Amino acid sequence: MKREVDIGAADSVEPGQRKLAFIDGRSVVVFNVEGSLHAIENSCPHNGASMAGGRLEGSVITCPAHGLRFDLRTGCMPGVEGLCLNVLPVRTADGKLMVEVE
Ligand code: FES
Image (cartoon, rainbow, N blue to C red; front, side):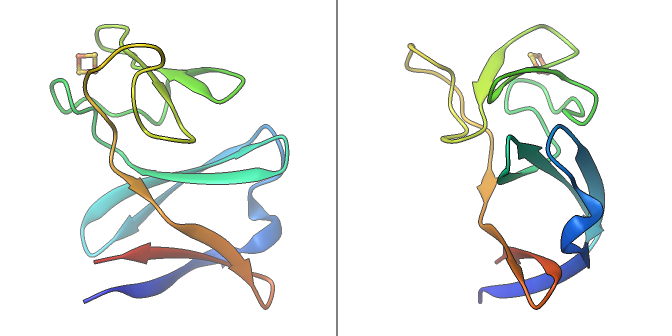
């Protein structure tokens, strides 16, 4: 069943910032890329590394462990068929940051 979880104030992730949250024991990272919010499960599909500290260029994040790159907009590797991050719907509502989880 899908539900939305409040993970803090909408303005707690300003453009260029990221925020780590825990939902039901799962680690989730929310990024604000030039005003667009993106949420992912904090686990690289390659080998499970944390993505929270990954280098971001535009909307493309590099996994700190082995350097695979993923576009936060799709979750997938740009330009190649490959692995994809688990992207979660995220929005702001009533001044809160809401992430949708199953
Ligand atoms: S765990 Fe992310 S690239 Fe290997």
